[in-house]
Image (tube, rainbow, N blue to C red; front, side):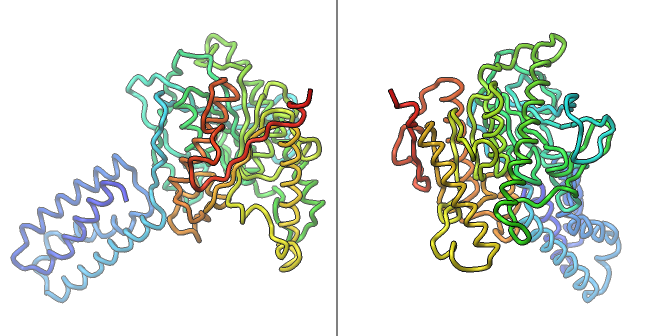
Length: 475
């Protein structure tokens, strides 16, 4: 719970108890007044959200009965006090189950700004859904080193129209980035593109985007329209992914069909990456934009989570501007699966037991499970072949699950709700950020990174391997 959530709950608890003390009428009124002040600050400073609705209701009951309840019968006061107590307990449970989580503190020295931009790819017709222009439209969010004037506010985690009712609290949850702050004139900065997972959002890796920006990168996350979460465009319309196919499920498909779907959509989304780079290049050359000469297109990397990792590798394969790729726990589709990637690549996997199948998992169990493990095994062969041939890095993080590579592991402490693994999310994010930053600092900035040279890893949970590359070492 956050500060004023806790303070407000304490005052409500106190008020419910003071109702039963006949001699504490004046104290009851004082505590109620303090409760109103605390709730007012909470609503103004932290933002109202549905987890606190039981607490708000309890406060309304207390305020409505401030002048009457102290003189009522002890039995009635006990009933009202018990109801208020239950509402306060309910709030405590909800705020624990769905917390207003905090993103990791940034380790870099740069203040971080963020801006949301609209991109239209005039070269492609939209085939995934309806578009007023008939062209492929994207929303992107950029995190960058900033020089805030002091008037800007910290950006919210997500915009309200891009959230379901249950997730609406994230529209008042603040990040570490200042919305629309001025770009710090210290560039040009290297650029890293982020691709979310299938049905994911551009904000799902905010913990990484902010960290990279704090170290002098311009990090750009892409909403792949109609294949991700809800996306709000400048005209107010909202696109969804209701017509997108299911990827990664073998209940009604074969391995070959899944490979084919994966190949198709990583190519579509890799074209999105190219369109974003095209648009950023134009902004970089326009003296009337805040981006003028602040992006270095000789130092561009791509990264992504799940299928977004495959998109990053595919984008690096087909776009010469992208020099390196980082895949966070994703299978590899498209040209990279077939031919490998002759550019630096890092792959970070979840717990080895969640990545590589045992012989029993390949032979027995439900057919959908066996097909899943068969695909995972085939993918691992593709990845290791590419790394052996071209060089790169691979890591497994013990105690993690797929979702741990995103902010979603912070959404609830219950693994059954968030999908997180046994490793504490703060620890996971520290590890992932350390390797992500080291990879891009080394490959894009040419900075020697001891973390990439240290075997075994200084993180006890990490199994790390470097590949020199047969083609690189050949005479």
